[in-house]
Image (cartoon, rainbow, N blue to C red):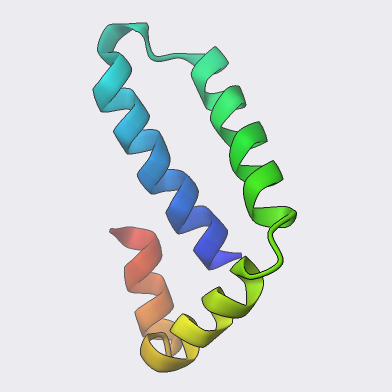
Length: 69
């Protein structure tokens, strides 16, 4: 869940920078729909997230740092 949040947050920041003043609800909904389809239907994504998390996200504090950034 933390990984989904962090990726969505990063993508939203990038989209907001790209669209500037035109950034709004339509772009947010499109991003969440597209990201959901991409990540939830991927066969390799869940395994890769777990693999990366086991190497670098070993404590609750490291997960909190990811969310706060």
